[in-house]
Structure formats: structure tokens, C-alpha cells
Length: 203
Image (cartoon, rainbow, N blue to C red; front, side, top):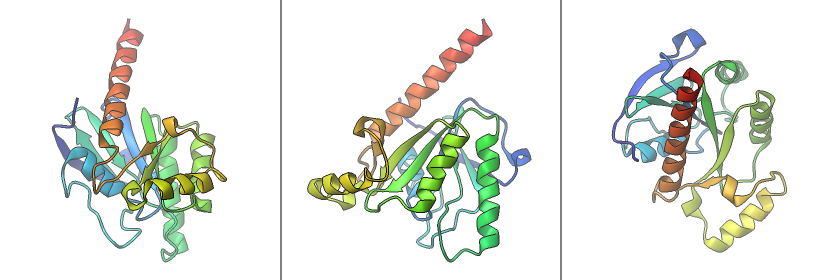
């Protein structure tokens, strides 16, 4: 299966702003400038569906995109940009927390720049996701920026802070499309599983 249609639906701040529920939704979160918008554009095959910017901290709202008329991609505000005023950081935190605790069926993709050792903000977000018992998966972005040897060494350093198996994470390059097929297949398998479970529960 593939993403044949995608459209921006709306931006939201509070739960009352969220669009009507349409099945399971896939949320993308990570540090400012980690490549959330670029990944969404890559997955959907649309260059400008999600706005990208070289200026970190641009995404200040929850942005909803509908995929194939039946599921949402959700672009959550970035975190960890030092130049953003503390008051705005706290507001972003509230926006993200409200979304995580909402009763919507969701899978969260935490994006980490493969070239960087996870920051304290990244580790805090992981703890936050676990605290709220969110189903989440790690996506290492910008994988094209490292050679195979550099990637091996970097993962060795990252594992000093994070415990994971390569089979449990995704490696993605929005520039080259590396990892697109694997992530897309995972998303559609989860959609189908969700539909089957809904049908079973209705019986």
C-alpha cells in the first residue's frame, strides 16, 4: 500500500481544536530542526505539505494532515531550541502533554538526528512517553549524512545513552528516501491491525 492522497487539515492548540477522530493516527515529535516536516513530506511524496524551515522552533502548533482520507499524520511542536523564550517552551510542553494524554489512538514516532548524541531534552521526552504509556518508535533521521563506518561508530556512542535493537528503530533520509518503504509498510500494517481489532471488538 502507499500514500496516494494527503492534505493539511488544521492546526490545533487545545484538545477541543483537534479534528474528528478517524482511526489510529501517527504523530511525529523531536527536537527543533530534526526533520519532522521533511519526513512527513517525504512519506507523502509532497514537497510542501508540511512547512519546512531552516529556523528551528517554527512548528508551534499541532498540525494535522489526513492520509488517504482515513488516518492522520500529526506534526507536534519541536523542543529543545535554546533561543525560544521560556514561557513559549512551557506552552509547547503543555500542548504536547495535552495531546499525549488525550484518548485518541496514536502511535508516536520520536525523531532523533543520527549525527547527534541524544540530548537531555531527548531523554526527557523518552521518559515522558514512557510515563504516559505511549506506544512509540524511534526514527533516526539524516542517515544519509554518515558513511556506514561512521553510522556504526555513532550508534555505538548513542547506545551508551539508549538501549535498543536495530530491528526496533527506523533509519530515514528524507533527502534520498532511504527508509521510506520500511516506515510506510509499518504504518499501513498498523492501520490494518487497528481495523481488524475494531471489527473484532464490535462483535
